[in-house]
Amino acid sequence: MKITDILNEGMEFGACKLEVRDDGTKMFSDPTARQEEQDCWVCDGEGDEQCRACKGTGKKMEWVSDSPEMQVSNSNGYAIQRDILGVEPDYAGSIMNDQLPAIRKKLLRMVNQESQRSSMHKDPSKSQKQWTSQEGNVTTIQRGATMHDMGRSDEQVLTYAQRLLKIVEYAMKNDCHLTWA
Ligand SMILES: [Zn+2]
Image (cartoon, rainbow, N blue to C red; front, side, top):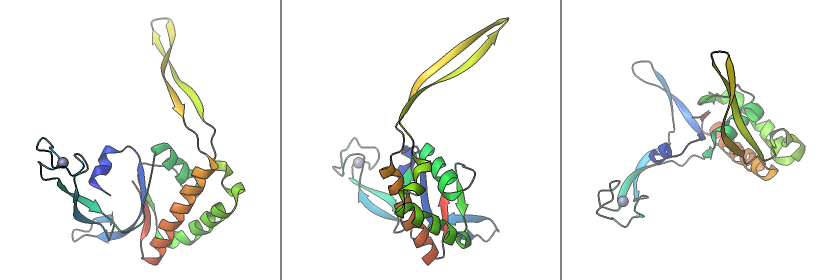
């Protein structure tokens, strides 16, 4: 998890170890995560005196990791959880190491056969949120902003399956669990 991620809406899938702290609390953490000095991404490393992110130094400490990660939008993250991982979608979650061989099998089928990916295909669409409000005896229909759904192409679903396969195989090899948040 990088600090810049808080600027992105969405979900990140990755491989983490389960750590038990001295006080007994358990938490997932990426064993390869560390902070490294990098060019400031706000001012492109120019060291602009006005840049509040690097205070004019052009350098900034960033979280980096060697383990494979995948970042997707929330709606695609939910679809991945439901259709690939077979779990009830949530903002954050995990699949433990001992269940990963079954997930890996499913991902291999998805990578190799288009028919295994079709349940995740989605046509682009437009929709408008609608709700009713009641005032006295009068019910009115309210309409919200029009939502444009970009859909999900086969190419996109294939990319998700391939990246997720990489994460799952990495997790299996490195005694990690599959996590998302
Ligand atoms: Zn800067």
